[in-house]
Image 1: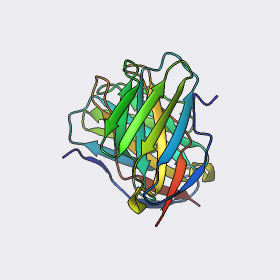
Image 2 (image 1 turned 45 degrees about the vertical axis):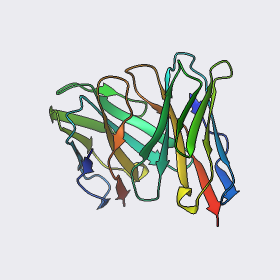
Image 3 (image 1 turned 30 degrees about the horizontal axis):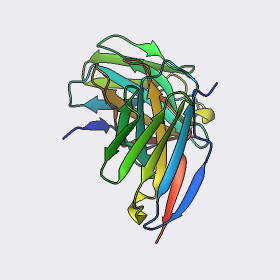
Length: 112
Length: 111
């Protein structure tokens, strides 16, 4: 069965902390994505990666960076967490051809 | 600017009746469309998709209709069940590119 796993369900961090959100997929998918979901705004793309060591900015990359050292793992990094980064973060993966994306269970991040 | 729009934030339907969720898009290059269902505190789960070469795709109680000239798609759920109560997101992409998601419609099915 398809599996995308995010390392934490809930996180509370302090303003200014460096935060790492980890995502692992077991489907050998080339494409991986990080979204954030906020009320009334839907899912907005932060960064995506088409292959190992490749990354592309999405619609809202400011304040974030990513790392993809291995095909199965895609990490989202908040360099200096701020309260406006409090959100639900969703990781997804997709095969190269046009297919649906599979999502992880989400990480609810609260920055205080 | 929002490329995919779901103009109804919420919808309530009686159990057993039809639920119709709507979605509009602006980019005529989009050729692949999907619907996802999301429960609170969980990630979205894929429901059904349609490519631009079709105008209808059916999977059990779920049917997606695509009207390319109107840049409109809809999801029909028949019959609606209480377990269908969730937030539904439509998404669109141009082949191989990123998905653009709508803002979601919260469906409540009343027993």
